[in-house]
Amino acid sequence: MSLTVYRKSHFNAAHRLYRSDWDDEKNNAVFGKCNNPNFHGHNYELEVGVTGTINQETGFLIDIVELKNIIKEEVEDYLDHKNLNLDVPEFKNLNPTMENIAVLIWDKLNAKLLGRFKLSVTLYETPRNFVVYTGN
Ligand code: NI
Image (cartoon, rainbow, N blue to C red):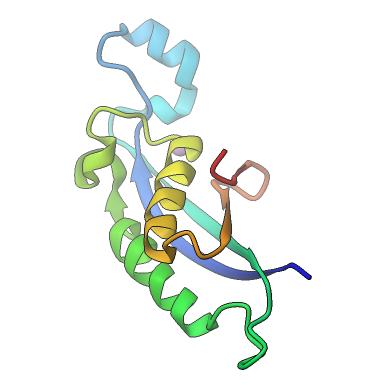
């Protein structure tokens, strides 16, 4: 019997989407408002899903406090109130799109969970725009 435990989280961050090897016209055409040179913010909502089986001794799939602490340390402390382009080394030469942010979050959480669970990351950049990444 397999089931999934979810934990929600939240962070605010600023970004700019652009390519330095493209001119302004092409950057504006592809990235629109997200190419604002002075950056802009998003309220990111995160849902982390951990799939596994129930530990018969505890009745837990995962200790939710452990999951909460891992998300706090790996995601909130790392991304909240940051300028993703300037403050987060992974985005020095990689556009901080919601797709790339979701992959970064998945990689960081999966490294901490040591492959004990199947992990899914759902990241909302706006209430209507979101991405799901399950590591495949
Ligand atoms: Ni944006």
